[in-house]
Image (cartoon, rainbow, N blue to C red; front, side):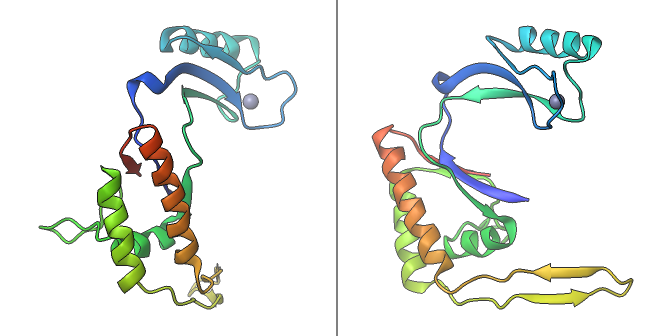
Amino acid sequence: MSTTFHPTISEADFRGFEIVCYGDEDGHTPGTYANYEEASAAYAAGRESGVVDTICCSLNPIYLTLADFVNISNSNASDLLDMLGFRDAETGELEWAGSVPSPDMRARILVARALGSDVGIPAATTTGARGATMHDFGRRVGYFADVLTRLDVLLDACDRHDRDISWS
Ligand SMILES: [Zn+2]
């Protein structure tokens, strides 16, 4: 599971639907369609004729990509969202999805740089009570400094396109 930061999507970014095969099956036919009705009809017809399989083929909306997204694991996102102050005022729960104007995020990044922790977490391997082996790959020192710099770049793109920044 991961969390992705990106420019807030607008209806104007919508470009239709696509059928994509994430497998390596020969003959699975990708395609792009203007609307959901055409795409879902093609998906159903593809299942009938064998060029679409629900195991490896997906029907996705297509949006214009305005900038490279910043994608991080949820374990890192948990600490990042905490540093950025994204907690519900009443429940104290982390806000795993949201959208704020770019100046709001820039202010939060300033605070995170000043007050956040960027210490490393060593890698560790543990064995559970029933024998499952768990590898935690840890986190290197300076990881969040790099993520915050990537968010700066993303915010520049948000500003160029007059968009808020969203995450989920
Ligand atoms: Zn496929």
